[in-house]
Image (cartoon, rainbow, N blue to C red; front, side, top):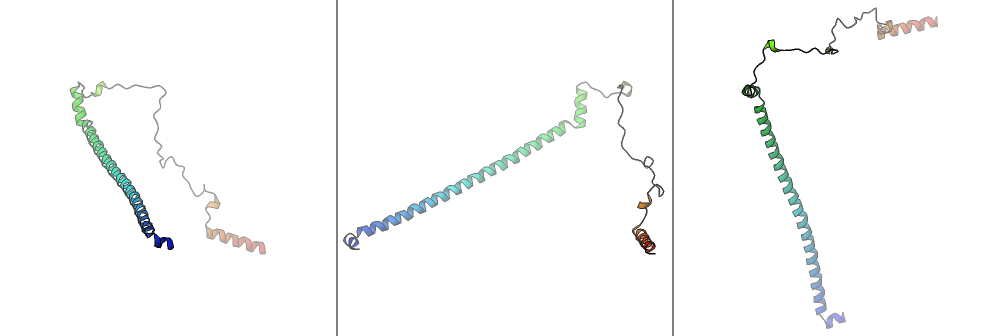
Length: 147
């Protein structure tokens, strides 16, 4: 205490040092906050730019698909074929080529004529018995074994 009474500027220096320390810490926190905020803003802007780019690409793709559909429509293709000198084929001009060993695939359609007809006689008796019939049979068998 005696030293502070002799030199009061020491207390002032401590107060100024503490105040400057608080200012430096607050400045560092503010700088860190601004850095994080600016990075988030930059990332958000990049996302917006990429979203716009995706939308533009989708629009261009849709336009190209529309152009392709228009160019490959039957009326346009027929017109282009006539301009190139092609003409519709006549029936007498058709030639068929027989390939030896080729068998046309048969459709796998099951008709009722092809399915085996199931009758009550062809089914085993175990599968014709109802639960009540089975219980009745078990009771009858147990009563026979008791007698």
